[in-house]
Length: 160
Image (cartoon, rainbow, N blue to C red; front, side, top):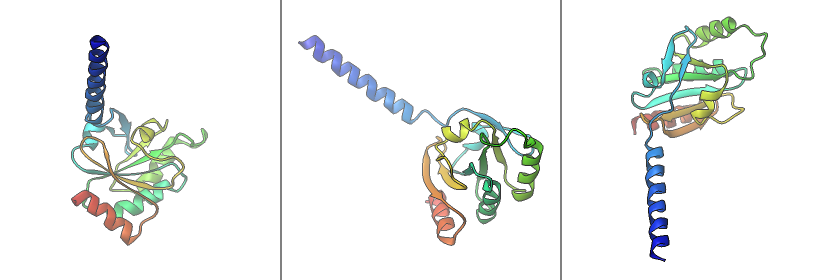
């Protein structure tokens, strides 16, 4: 009886320890190129509180550019989930469009959509703004186009 009880206590302690380590494991590991073909990994992104602007729709690049202008002066990156992009669309045209609409913001090009999902972005959204901590945890999320209230909420999440 004591042996069974001891094993269940040990198993419970191990599960709690594993859960604690997973919760503090740090940001996910990845390497993606931006629109200027620079390779960026998680250590370049998660150096403090960071704002990630992402989406998986046709107009996502435009929305990233709009949000980036409003959040000028903050640590901002974009991420485009391009998994559903038709095969006949040249990657160079995607890059040049993003250079045009977000000239000051690195937009990570996730051709397979795997990092986008790993970072917790919801599917089928034109634009999602997420504030992440240095450990990669999502601290705040705003979905939708730029409004004064939404910009204020994002700024508060970064500074608060």
